[in-house]
Length: 129
Length: 129
Length: 129
Image (cartoon, rainbow over all chains, first blue to last red; front, top):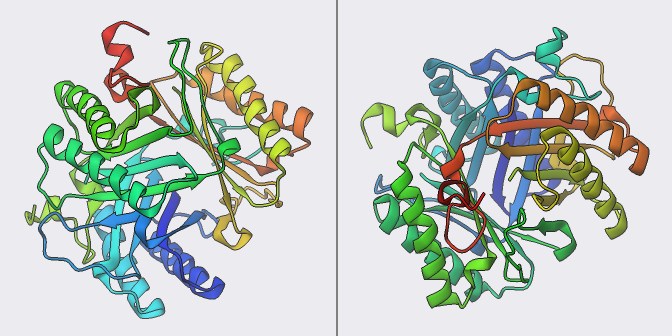
């Protein structure tokens, strides 16, 4: 936890995908202060025609580099979320050359009992985490 | 926002997929009163064997046209949600020939701080939206 | 409802996928006490390089059998969730040979008005369910 789902247009090499995932994880470590191995990421590739991301009138132009991040996490305060948005864009720009205009994020919140990381146990409830 | 994920069985042409996405957006505009360019849609194609949608005993028959819509949005009142279900089915029927028996929707709610539409900023918090 | 999204590494046969879906449904029936036909499941296949699931320091080793379950449901009490985690792992082990170290679950909660199972109606609101 958090679990991060990333929706993207097809076309990145395996190394480029890894770069995106690594950048997202660095941003998560810095903003949410999670443990190093608290890393759960799923990258979905789509045909360009299967993803539409406009801009709610904000004047943001998207490119084929578009990334939509959907994060599920236990509650995080607003400051942490804002830090994640900023840090994610900074990491993606510096290590992958992806512009912040191509980075969309949506976060959803759940709770301690909503996670099992393996073994059929809810580790936030058992005290293992 | 809202972000709409659509899970479907493989087989639609590019134009048919576009028709589904356009119909969903018209329904969203009408029901949730969002701005015209508040459009974020991801269409997932699956093998038929990878999607199972029964009917909780309601007596609804599904076809290969099945569409499962998963919507993430800031809070919307019940009336808006009901209007979306109705309007979505009406739009899909009239413009795509898809029966309402093939339309499943699940909505999840998040909050202002949970969205960044680009630029690393949370536009509902900054006042840009 | 619940809607279960399953993210997995490519490589299972159609029968093996069906086995996973059936096991998950048996676990859901037993833990959440849902009706037999309350079954909504989506199985996503990914390249191995597109899914990263570490262990938050718990010392859990993942294999190519890894399964990440993302469940959306109306509220369920903690006891039901814990029963689902346990039962899911038991079913996957006994019927598919999948170890519990390969089973991750994340649950998100929504409410009655958030579901339409077809026909453009919200069946938990109309009284049909």
